[in-house]
View 1 (tube, rainbow, N blue to C red):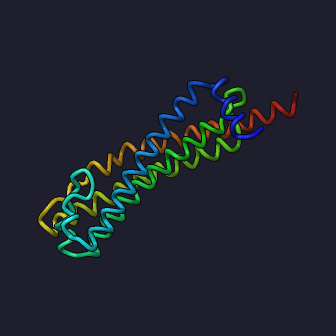
View 2: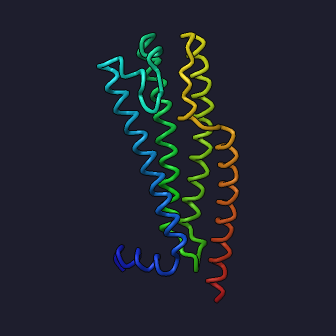
View 3: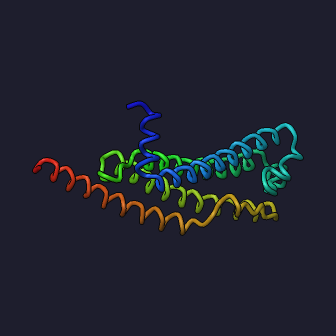
Amino acid sequence: MNWKEAWKNKWETQPVLMLLTIVIWSIFIGLCIKGGTLLFTSLYSLFNPEVAQNLYQGLNLSVAREWHLGYYLGAVSLLLGILVAKAYIFFLVILVFLTIDLVHPFSKEVSVLISRIGKVTVEVGVLIIIASGYFHWLSSQTLHSPAPSGFLGGAFEYLIMGAVIYAIALVFKRGVEIQTDNDLTV
């Protein structure tokens, strides 16, 4: 079965799941656009320092840019790392939705993907904690707070969500074992 037939079959048998996949795709594309825009404007700001005043949606890192280029690049790198990791989470969710079959939902591939989502979600929480500390330190050194709150999000929420997803991954792993045992006994 080619991918077009598989896609059509999924729409016929699991329309709600496919609608959710489209929503997740739009979030993924939005995060990629946000990350790409931040990357482009950050690179452009290396040649034109005035651009650092509004990198993306009011993000002003011009004081850090003027103070020290290395610290500025560190701040931008942390923000880009967080955005890339968030986009990767949504990419993995897309893969889960495209891989899962609601007739036999427990598969090794889905279990591995869910485990990976939990791991990356915890990593995002840790990255947010590191970035928050870095921006706090940076603002104390430059006497100006860059306030990247729209880019960071809440670390606690990501850590809790990662733990919950990891627990779901354990349930899926056990479900794969039970489903495999059932398939062998039948």
